[in-house]
Image (tube, rainbow, N blue to C red; front, side, top):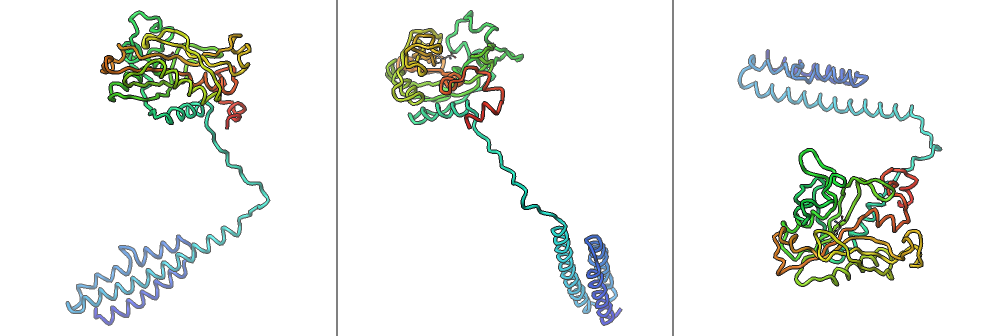
Length: 344
Ligand code: PHE
C-alpha cells in the first residue's frame, strides 16, 4: 500500500469514527464505538500492521499519521462522553421531586457517659497537680493483684467469693492497686500517677456492681508522710464537692498500706445535721488510702529506706452517685436514655 492510499483511508476511518462517537446515544453505545476504533484490537491500531508493507523511509510518517488520527478520535470520544454524562445528570435532576417543606433531620449529638464525665473530672484535678495517668490490664496475675501487694496467702479477699477467676489462671483485677507495683517496676521514683480503670468483684446490689471503676493514686517521693496524703485528698474533695468540704481520716486496714485510713467527707446532703444518706453520722466514706507498705515498695524495686509513698483508691461510681444524688448503681449500666440524658 502506498502512503497516499494509507493516508486517505485513515481520513475515512477518522470521519467514520467521529460519526460513530457522535451517534452514540448512551454510555453503552459509546463504549462499544470506543472499542471498535480505539481498542487494542481496534481499527486504528490495525493500521500499524501496514508498516511492513511500506518503504522504510515512509514508516515514521505512518506512525505519525496513526497517532494523529488516534488523538483526534480520543478528543471526540471525551467530548461525547461528557455530553452524555451532562444529559444524564440533567435528566435525573429533572425527574427528582424535591419537597423543600419537609422538616430536616436533626443530627443526634452523643454525650459523655456520667461515669466518663466523673472520671475526667477526677483526672483533671490530679493532672493539674502534676500527676500522670498510668494504666494496667484488666485481666491480671494473682502476683500483681495480691501477692506483690502484701496480701497474706490466706487473706479472705483472695477467696473466690470476691475474685472472678479466669481459666488461664489469671483473674479479673479486683482493684486498681496492681498498677502501683507495675508502675514502680517501669519508672524510677519520684513517681506521681493516677490509674483509672475497670475492676471486677463478685458483688451485686443497689450500691455494688460486679463491674465498676476506680482511680488509684500513687505518690512516691523522699520524706512523704500522712499529712501530705491528707493535704492532697482534702484539695481533691474540695475540688469535687465544694470549697468548704471537710474531710476526716479514720484508721483502717489494707495489706498494702501502713498505716491505712478510710477517708470521709462531711455529709454534702444534710450539712452534717444527720440524714439517711450519712446514716445520721454526718460523714460519708469516699475512699481508702494509706502510706505504701515498705514490702510493696520492695516488690517494686524501690528502697523504702530512701523513698516513701502514699496511695489511695477511689470508686468512680461512688463519687458520681454522691455528686448527682443517684441511689442505684445499676442505672449507670442500663443505657436508659431518660437517665443518661440528664448528664448530657
Ligand atoms: N485498693 C483498695 C480497694 O479497692 C483501695 C486502696 C487503694 C486503699 C490504695 C489504700 C491504698 O478497696
